[in-house]
Image (cartoon, rainbow, N blue to C red; front, side):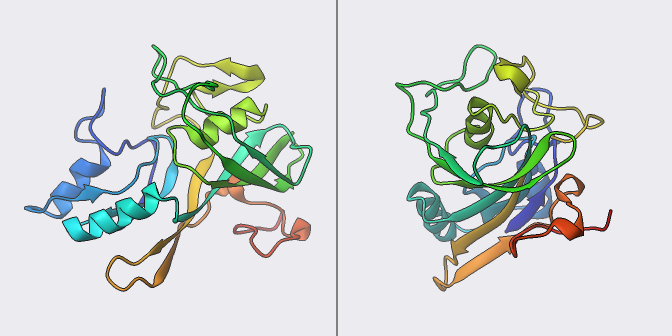
Length: 223
């Protein structure tokens, strides 16, 4: 099952979210079945999520995510402008969250690696970034961009000027956090054939059509 997850929607019931979770909704859609999550997205992150209806499929997909053979591309709009078009971050991430529930950079933490490519710089001082996580740590993309001084727009936890917030989840009426799971390529658990899934970019991804310089640039519009 591939779902284009909205936000804010957690994967599992937690905190003030009980019925409003992806697992609860899918159990209602597939009554009598056990839907198995193969990976996760933050509640605030939109985009492609893959699940399985059978244990054999779940095992195949989980192995792919654990072995980092899944190709993942995210889109992020960040405060600031990267100095280089292509850059990366390999900062380790804490094994456990802080008391506020937020992960931080920790030299003794879990190894994490994210590659980035600058797509466009907007006139308001923000930039559109393609993100390619090579590992799958909790909050990895958000934390890595924040540690580089490029916090994701409307992130309630990782704020500008290297400040940390006290909230973890945005409200339904709040501006969206600008992180989107755009593309995901897996090996089909039955056939082994590569299967690319794609979610349409959000409005905050759109850039003026006369500035396009890459075939991989997201959906565009006129000024």
